[in-house]
Structures are given as structure tokens and as C-alpha cells.
Length: 173
Image (tube, rainbow, N blue to C red; front, top):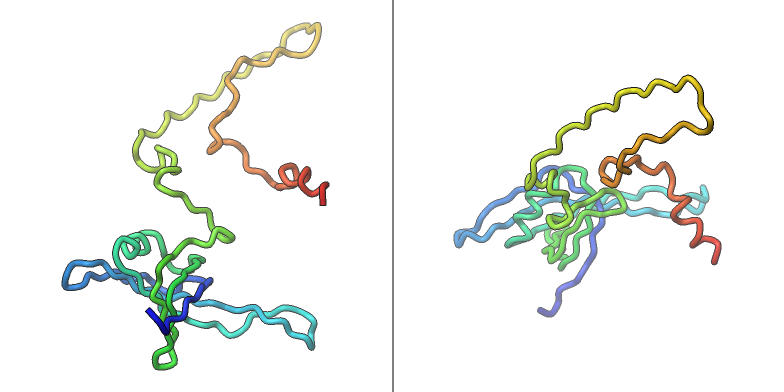
């Protein structure tokens, strides 16, 4: 269609997502995204938040069901679509909506672990290993108990820094 202006809106969901159905049964969802532009203040020499811009987004079809299922108040999103200004209010007829991964972690149905997706029973809690008494005399380092290494990344310790991962790539710059 001619005369439409494509736009990308990046901001936070404000309020709740409202899901309704048309007379023909097509799902339609409406939600508000508040975008806060960053502006450079030359007098102070620093960046500051500008005036918040509310944008009312509308989606239909399966996207409406997914949006209603996934989005809640204050979730950072990126939405694309055709924008229109009516009665001093910005409207976005969204073609795509996604969680902003700069602020959140998102899982897709196929990548969600079976336990979290409800496809498998939760594993039984592991029993604590009995303490091994120290030997009376040692002729070297203490033997390491034969346990399987922890391969379940869900249970592994979180990284405190990405330096070990990113350090090799930084040396080439």
C-alpha cells in the first residue's frame, strides 16, 4: 500500500496486553510501548533521557496470541510495522514484535529444556555425598572421588564476567 510509513519502535510495554477476537474469530491484541529517546545535552556534555513517546501497537492473528502470552508490563520489546498519527497519538500496525535481548533472556519452544516446558518429569534431587574421612597417612595427593562431571549447563555456575570468552577476540583489534 502506498502512503504507509514503516517504523521500528524500541521501548517498554506499558500496562497490560489486551486480547480480543473479531466477529470472524481472528485474534487481535493491543498494547502500548513507551519509547524514551536518548538526547545529547551539549551544555552539560552528557546524554539524558528525552520525553517518553507512547505508541499504541496492534497485532492480529497468531502474532496476537503470542504477544498476549509472552508480553507483560515493563518488558523491553522491539516492534516493526506501519506507523500512523491520528488525533496526536502514534499507532503502529505491527508486523513483527520481539523481546529485546539486550534486556531479557528469551526461550523458544524448541530450545526450552524439557523439564521447564513440562515435557519431562523433574529430575530427583541429588543426594549429598558422604564425607570421606582423611586417611591416617598419605603418600601423595588425596584421591579425587569418581563422580561424573557436571554437564548440565542449567546447574553450572554462572559466569561473573565475559572476559575469558571475549579476551582472545579483543587482541586482534
